[in-house]
Length: 195
Image (cartoon, rainbow, N blue to C red; front, side):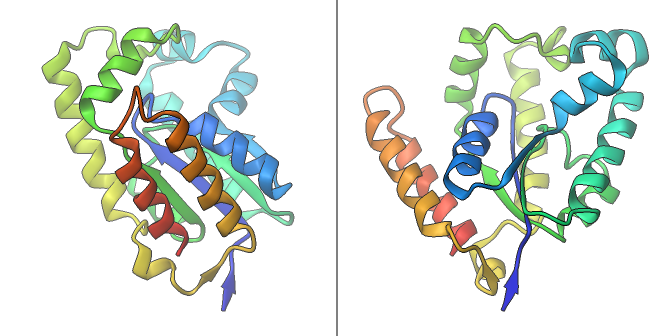
C-alpha cells in the first residue's frame, strides 16, 4: 500500500480550497502550503499586480516551479492549497500524479454567488461576463476530472486521517445546508477521493 506524503486541494475559484486545506492541515498536523501566498512572497506583490505587470504566462511559470518544489522535493507530509489554474499546464498535471489530489467540485450557480460576495481581486475575471466565466468553469472542470482524482484510483493510497477529513467535511455540509444544499453531493466526491 502506498502512503502519500502530499495532498493537493484544487478546484475552481471560490470552490473552498483554502478553507478545506486549512482544516485538513489542522486535523492532520501536516504542514500547510499555499501556492498563491508563496507566489506573492516570491514577487513581493499581490496576485492581481503580478498578472497586470508580468502577465499570466510568468505567473504560471512560477506557479509550476513552486508546485514542483512542494510535490517532488518533500520530506515531511504537506497539504497543498493549489490555485484553480494549476491544472492548465500538462507538466503540472503530471506532477500531480505523485500526490493525492482532492478536487473540490461546486456547482456553477454557487460559484457565481461566492464570487459576487468575495472581496478578493481575481485578475482572470476582470473582463469576463457570466457566460464567459461559465465557459472557463466548464473547461477547467474537465481538466480537474481528468487528473487522478477518482475514487478507484485512490483505493490503493493510504491516508491515515482520511476518515477524520471525511467526518469534518460531512459536519461542515450539515451546517451549510440552508444556504448550500448541493454541498451534500459534493461530500460524496471528497469521500471518493479519499476512499
